[in-house]
Structure formats: C-alpha cells, structure tokens
Length: 205
Image (cartoon, rainbow, N blue to C red; front, side, top):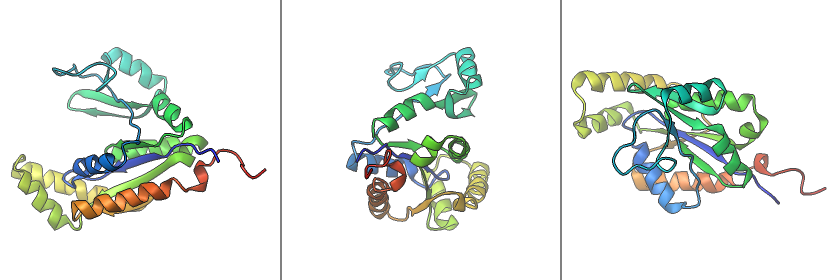
C-alpha cells in the first residue's frame, strides 16, 4: 500500500505547555516533517534564510497572500507569518507526516482550507492540547513570572474562549503530566498512520 502523509495540526491556549510537549514528541518521532514558515520580520543573529524562516518583504508577503499561497497566516507584533501550502502538500505527497505547531486561529484557517481541498481534508488531523483545569492553567501562567496581572487575566480570558471550541478538534490531549501527555500524543501519531483516508487509490483492485 502507498500512503500519503498526515498533516497533524496541534494547537492549544497560551501556558498549556505545548512547545515543551512538541519538543518531547519530536525527539521520539524524528521522522516528522516540518514546514519552514514565512515571515516579514528581519532575521535574528544566526538565522539563515530558508532554514529558520523564509524572510519576505511586506510586499512579497502581501503578493503571496493575495495569490492564496498560504495555508494559514497571522499578524503578530507588527509582523506577518504564514505557512506555505506548497511546502506542506509536497511533503504529504511523499508520504511524510508533518506536525504543525500553530495557534487556534491558524488551525481554524487550515480547517476551512481542508473543507475545500479533498487532499488536505484526507490528510488533516486536529489535536488540541488542554490543561487539566483552568485553575492549573492560571497557576502555570503565574509561575512563568513573565506577565503582569492584567496580561494574566487577558490570557486566561482568551484561553477560556479557545477551550470552549474543543469539539471542533478531532482529539484532545490533557497536559497534566508531561511524560503522560507525550506518551498519549505519541500513541495518537501511531494511530494516525493507520487511517484509511491516507491510503492512495485502491490497493485491492
């Protein structure tokens, strides 16, 4: 049988520990692909074009956005970021699974794009990383000691709204204990590879 890759869209509210979890899972699944994002911000020391990011001018980003080149895009702190559809699709067609660590707005855009594209629809799986409770999330945000009280309340309010949409995702992973959450996500990655939707054609004809 010939399989296409999975597009694993992973998102969750700020403070849920998503980045740490993704790092742990990538260590267990080094075969996972990734997409180099585009950005309009300037390169930082040590960053190389087309390695860390595709560094684009505002004009070039706007042109590519208008052309529909981005699978998802967002404006963050006066800069724009986007995931190129061409890079994602090329890897999926090679049978390589891709893990996208993006915010909930980005996940929503990919879901909308998948509704109009059968190839993306068959490949996409949406996983939300959630805290065991809002109280634990607040404790984690305060433990970072990087935001003032107003910012913490804003993040908690945003998280509550984001978590209310959990049913739009296919799977939930509760990040209470990092080791347990990583094991749960690793199991999901193994299950994803057995989905009928990613089998190319009919191998039984």
